[in-house]
Amino acid sequence: MALHGGFLPFGGTFLMFSEYARNALRMSALMKQRVIYVFTHDSIGLGEDGPTHQPVEQTATLRYDPTWKCASVRHRFEIRVAWAGRPLERKDGA
Image (cartoon, rainbow, N blue to C red; front, top):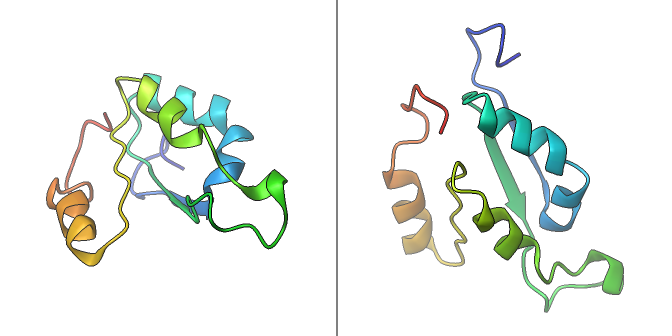
């Protein structure tokens, strides 16, 4: 959808599952596609589903790639700062 144009694709899931989407995330970043990914439940304190759903190093590995803009928000003021960069208005996708 991003390659076709006319849409601003976005996706959201638990942060732990970013591991499964790593190649797609990397490819969209390298191609400078305008895509928004929202990952939730990034706390190690969460874990009704056990240790397999507790992200430990996922945020750090997402920040390794210089083409990604990664914000870890935990409070309403941090959310404002994260969206202040105007991700919806960006055209370059980086």
